[in-house]
Amino acid sequence: MCMSLCLLQTRSLLSVFEEDAGTLTDYTNQLLQSMQRVYGAQSEMGLATEQLSSQLLEYEKQNFALGKGDEEVISTLQQFARTVGELNTLHSELASQMADRMIFPMIQFREKDLTEISTLREVFGIASDELVGEVAYSRRKQHQASMQYYCALNALQYRKRVAMLEPMLGYTQAQIHFYKKGMDLVSKKMDSFLVSVSSMTQSIQAQLDSEAEAMRLTQRELLSMEDTVYMPDRDSVPVNRTLIQKAGYLNIRNKTGLVTTAWDRLYFFTQGGNLMCQPRGAVAGGMVLDLDNSSVMAVECEDRRYCFQITSPSGKTSMILQAESKKEYEEWICTLNNISRQIYLTDNPEAVAIRLNQTAIQAVTPITSFERRGEGSPNPDRLASHAEETPCSAPEAEDLIVPGTPIQFDIMLPASEFQDQNRVGGRRTNPFGETDDDCSPESDDSLLQQVFAVRFLGSMAVRSGQTQEVIYEAIRQVLAARAIHNIFRTTESHLMVTSSCLRLIDPRTQVTRISFQLQEVTQFAAHQENGRLMGFVVEGRDWSEGTEEGEPSFSAFVFESNTEGEKICYTISLGKDIIEAKKDPKALAQLMKNMPLTNDGKFLLLDSETGDTANGGAPDEEESEA
Image (cartoon, rainbow, N blue to C red; front, top):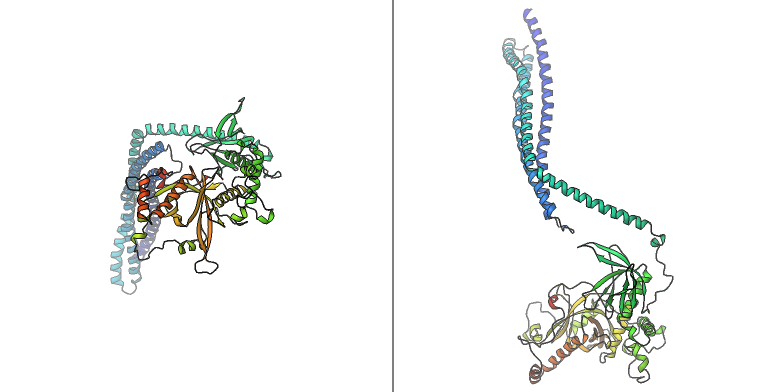
C-alpha cells in the first residue's frame, strides 16, 4: 500500500516535471529560431554591405554617355566603398561572435540536455510498459531509469537559468564591441569626409533647383503659345521652288556646352549670294555665310522638325536652322540651292529659276506628257542666247536618254548588272587561291593609284556612250530628280583611279562597293558650269536578247567631288593613256619620260583629296550640290 502511494505521488510529481520539461523544450526551440533569425539577419547584413562596397566600386567602370565631370563622384564613391568595407568586416566579426557565443550554446543545450530528457522519457515509458511482464527486472530497470531521469530533471532546473542568460550575455557583449569599433571608425575618419559630401550634395541640389526653375519657365512659355503651333501643317499654298530671295524668322541652334544646345529665334534674309541675319534690337543685318557653292541638306534633330543644315564649300563652317512649317522648310532649301548655283548673277534670275524648275519637272516626267522639248542642253540659261546660232548642234534629250528612264540614287546595283560585270571584263577569283602574275592588281596598278573623295548622286541607263552631251544630260536629270523629290543626303565614298580600273570604296570598311574596268569607260566629263560635278559612261552587255555576245548597253554615273571634277577626268584620261602605252614599250617609255614620277615609280599627281581619311572613316552623311 505504501509502495502504491509512493508510486502515485512519484507519478504526480513526475507529471509536473514532464510538463515543465515540455514547456521548456517548446520555448527553447522558439528562442533558438529567434536567435537563428538574428544571426541570419546579421550574416545577411555582412553580405549586403560587401555587395554595396563592390557596387560602389563598379560606378567607375560604367560607360555613361554623359560621363564628363564624374571624377569627384567616383572618388567619393570609392571613399564610401572603403568605409562600407570596414563596416562589413565589423559585421562579419559580429556574426561570427553571435554564432560562437549565442547560437552554439543554445544548440548545445538543446541537443545535450533536452534531447537527453526526451530519450530518457522514452526509455522510462518503455520500462513502465514492461512492468507487468517482468516485475522485478522491470522495477529495477525502471528504478534506474527513473533515478537518471529524476537527476536530469533536477539538473535541468539549474541548467535552464544559465542557458537563458549566457547567450544573451554573449549577444550583448558582441553588440557593445561592434558599436565601440563603429563609433571609433565614424568619429575619427568620417567627420571631414561627411562634411565635404554634404557640401557637394548642397551644391548639386542648388543646381537642380536652378535647372528646375528654368524648366518651369520654359514650360510656362510653351503653355502660353497659341494653339496654331499644335495644329498640323496645311499646305494650302503650293511650295515655290523658283525663289532667289527669301526672308523670315528661323530658329538657329547654338552650342552652350559640350553636349548641350540652345535654339534662338532670329530674322534671316538673303541679299545677293549672302545669308544675312538681323539680331534683336539691331538696326541693320549682318552677313552670316556666303552661299555661293554652299551645300544645303535636310537634317534630323532629336527634338525639332523642319531642320536643315548649310555648309560652306570648304566644309569648315556649318549651321543648323529650323523653319516654322513644312512649306517654309522646303522653300528655304530650294531658295538657298538656287542662290548656291549663282542664278542671281544672270541677267534674268527669275526666269532662269523658273526655267530650271520646269526642266527639273520634265526630267522626271515621261515624255508623253509634254511636247518635244528643247531643254536637252545641260545649260538651260545659255540655251536662249545660242538657240539661233546652233539650232541642230546639240542632240535632243530623248536621243540621249530614254524618256521615263528610272534613276538610281544609291550604289546597290541590280543582280543583272553584277552578272554583266562578271561576264565582260570582270575578274573572277580562283577558289583554290591560285593567282596569275599578269592579272594581279599590283602589277596592273603599279603606275597609277589616285584616290578622290566623291559623293554618288545617281545613275541611269543611256542610249549612247560616245558623246559628252549624254553626261551633261544625265547630270541635269539626276540633279533635277533629287530636287523634285527632296533628296538632299548623299554618302561620301572614295573613288580610286588606277591604271586598270575605277573602284568606289567605302571609307569606313575599305570594302569595294563597285568596280569598273577602265577599258569599259567610254566617256567621261566634268560639268561645264559646276566644276565639282562629273560623270562617266560605262559600257556593258545586255544578255536579254539571248545572243552569244550580247547587245551593248550604256549606263551613266554621276558624282560630286570635293574640289574640281576635271582632276578626276584628267586622272582617268591618264589611266587610259597608260593602257594604250602598255601595248608599245616605246610609247610607255616616252609617256613615263614626259610625266613626273614619284620615288616609288608612280605617276606624280596632285595630292589625294581624302588625305588621312583614305584609311579611316569619313563623315557618314554629307550634303550634295543637288
